Length: 511
Image (cartoon, rainbow, N blue to C red):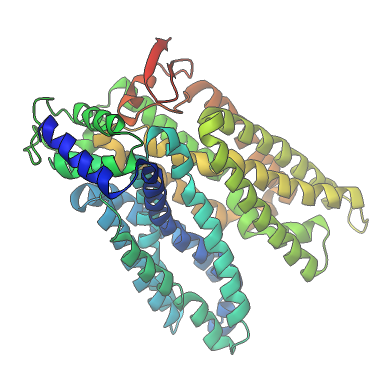
């Protein structure tokens, strides 16, 4: 692919679409990829209502029901673990299609389940699809988006999780009117519909330019970069950066080349990640695993899955009041995720994470304290404690959603070197889903052992430790090209960073 060939391709592309449409094209790609997150959100939302009818119809015990509620996150580890190798093998785009196919089959199996083992098989298949989706959506978006809008676009998955939760609630509302043995099957089975629409829509998306470069398809990679870059120069610069990161000499410019020492199928990646990582890669891996652990271990799933129980313990006796408060939690969570998404490229990842985790620590401490006071004063209606508890739940989900929720996916999808990105990100997602499953399946037992106030004080301790970890280990990545990320890591301090211009060009490096 000669420079004249590039010029010709760009002129043709510009004749077809104005340059101003480039950001819209990247936006559309991010929307389609992030819609895979709807399948996880839908499952969370629909199971919260369907569980009541499943327990009645299949005569499940409380233990069986608790396992059924949280096991999908454990099952998703299979998909998360396989997603890195799969996406390097068949590409990012077809991995998204595969995620939709798994969830489609899982939804149908759950919808036609006749007993507990049958529905658990459906949960397993759907869980694989969720694992694939949670890993690949932010990775694809980060690789397609320009550096100037990468944070905004890469945080979309968290928004779509909440949209999925809302769709699950709507499904519960409509199908609850059907007979018990039919209603819950429709609730779960109808989840197959959006997965089909998603798989078809994804086929209209381009492949990740970084994956194309790793396959030696430089011409195709440049076409995608030209469609998603603001200027011709930016597209050429991004292509050269990717080639350099992939170890491709600058003088190799044909449309299709043989990549030197090609490891596109993931050969040697696990060794480079886990066995003999460089200091920078080791730091990156610790940062990724640490942020995913903190996101879930600080208790967000306990609040989302068990909001009615929390509000009941806080003193809201009416089921209607508990449900209304739970709806308010969902609204607050969604609104503040939108806020976090809009400001992540303005204020940076590090600032939002520190602000978010600090707010979570304060709200969890106040929530745990108020619930403890209520628990130790049975028979007394402490209005101030009830109001404080409800307010702190809202504050917790708001502060989570402005930083720890969306930024976790942004940060971990952009910091790994291109050859290690898919598998590295998959490790983070695996830990995220593991912690989510553990929290979801043990919160009731934890509340009984420590009291519900004690459980939230424990989460507050995790949030405090996470804040120290973020402050110490996580450098700012806003505006840094993906191919330059590795240079920020290796010193195990957040003080090593680069000053960049608005165009993402390096000006000076400070240590």
